[in-house]
Picture (cartoon, rainbow, N blue to C red):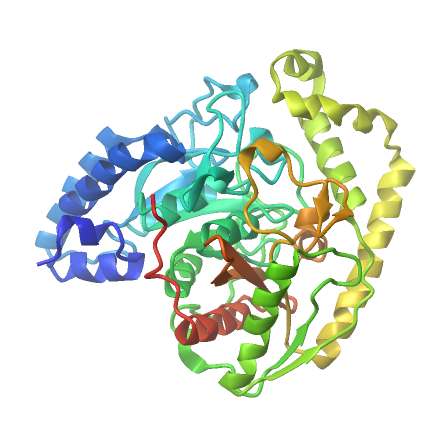
Length: 471
């Protein structure tokens, strides 16, 4: 018999099988996670809104469905956390902003619809920075989310609440989104798996306007298998999102174990412009070349990618200012205070500046395309630094003794939002202080399955799921 303390560390695939086989009750599963949330969440502030009453009702219905031997969905009875910028019908959705502090959506987000249809049970909403604009998780509505590995440090962002919840055993799986690293950055900082699919693979609707050509929805999990299972549930077109892609035509989970022997990997420690903490580079380098032990070719490459960090900041701020619209003066009075330091930038960005950013995006893609003409995957650090202290603020302004700009520590993630391609962060080691480090695996256009297979191969050789934070 599975003990309550063991339930909260089981994966979604394990839970689903145990529930369908009658080994576990959905009611007991939900109860175990809510007990864990009650005990641990006050320490880290990952969940900001709980849907406990509805979740328990859904668990009871899920249990009756098992007993009646009805056909069950792939996530039947499995708890899931939803980032607080994804609408859930009848549940407060704030975007971490005072402007939406009491907003209650009248319909579900597309991926929430799909999770429900698969049998998943929504446990609640997870924290994020206001409007998801920065790489840490803090906002004027709910405050800061702390890293389960060290409560004095950031969990990353913007899907930091989701990552912290999964890492701390508050839920087996979660969903987040990524328009510059917001799935991969917190997954790396929290020692779990974060997967950014290709732009359009998972539809986005309804959503605040903005970030249409950067933002991607995706899973945060403790195992690659669980991410593949979630992709099978969430991927596919929806007419409400004009950027959504045709069906993938393949089961991610069903084809996960086909292996990567003979694949070619390029490893870049800096993309040509990034400064990396030496300990992080050492850990990531060792992990990257371990693919040779799996029968792959790994070569270090000297790249000279265009750095679009400043462009990313310009696009992000311009989009947010446009989305807020005529509520700008109201927002300035209640916004996350550090935002006031850069909101002025939107008034200085012209249409021609925006066009030049698109030209540079094409240049960046041309550089990345040449990598994929020779290699199947590109390997980099996920973040340039390990999780930093919360009191550092938005991020370090110095790495390895050298000054960096505001996007310096996130230099490895946003290039692959600009180029649309799929990318994942896999846990690849720990610093001398015991802090997680992530390896980023980047795939060619539309090759989510390839990235998942490479991630799974790494996981099998260097398993991480049994390494739990000391929270």
